Length: 425
Ligand code: LLP
Image 1 (spheres, rainbow, N blue to C red):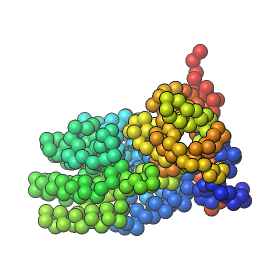
Image 2 (image 1 turned 30 degrees about the vertical axis):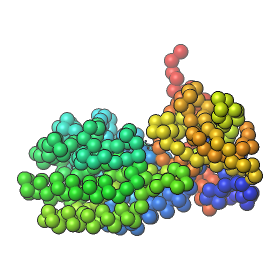
Image 3 (image 1 turned 90 degrees about the horizontal axis):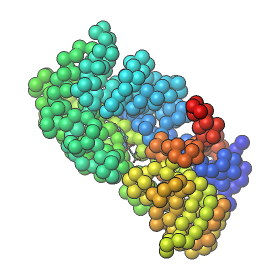
Image 4 (image 1 turned 60 degrees about the vertical axis):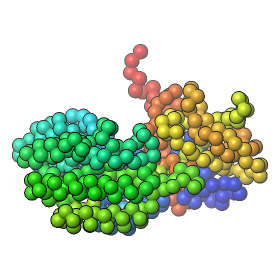
């Protein structure tokens, strides 16, 4: 039913539904996804990049409703496993609008991709070339791209930088491995090379590294043209566009990115004497992240060691990002109005380790107490998709909100779900 309760003072609403109502109806912790915001972000990309192919990077967060929204908004999908591929296809997504990534694709990944007819497969290593060619068979044909490392450092944290030569993805231009692999692909008649791919990293706040990537990639395309007479119709610049996690954080300006990349690409291609390839981009975080809110219930508040700890009913099993990358969030009290002065607190999770932090050194009203609800904004990407089974607490549900209506997309993982996989004894 549509929400009838108008938000009370101090109460946050998403998609016209008060968060407190969602907590009452679905329990906590719970992830709330604003459908209109997801769709709006897809449209922003389509408008900013009208001639590009926009692929949603499914690793940020995937469920069947999300797949349908991407389809309806005209986006493609970047998938990186048989699991993501199969889920998308069962939700009715056309496989030809999907691109398969992965630095270590399993036999099952490749078999599923070929069986379902995935649009393009991005080759990440030399050994994959022969393996893929054999799987396609002499009479088959599969479109591929080659993932190239442009040698550019960008991204919010060392662990999510993928444009430098010393990390595991792709083939480096600097030492010639990319050129070798491309020549080998060209020697396989059943593999059709449609373009080059690079992904610099994630949570990138500046346009500059993308412009550098355009120059390096077009430079390589020019050399391939000289050596092999090759003209590639597409150039995939990956994703990585930063969002704000806290008020005041920098986000990447998409309009500026689109305008500058378009100009840089046109200029670089003109001076290389190449036609301008169709641009492909793969945003994940910037589509799902800002549309999600994590909602927790406070279970305990205590003073210890000179700090105030506010402990909630979720934590690193539903959001490992503070522990992995030291990311800082800004939870907000919701469900009641507090006039108390702000206090510095550390919001922690319920898990059995000291690194289980939801928000380090943040501000909440000083009267925050057990039973309160805390909403963590920008929780739509790389939270639940990286959720774990730690401490067997069960992964939280996902609720979609739109026009004052809330509906369950993914149900809470129950102890019965967990027990049913345990087939030993
Ligand atoms: N394309 C490729 C080939 C990727 O590997 C990724 C992300 C994307 C696109 C999308 O990047 P985005 O637009 O979402 O930044 N778990 C980390 C992020 C890892 C990103 C992995 N690859 C985090 O929580 O920050």
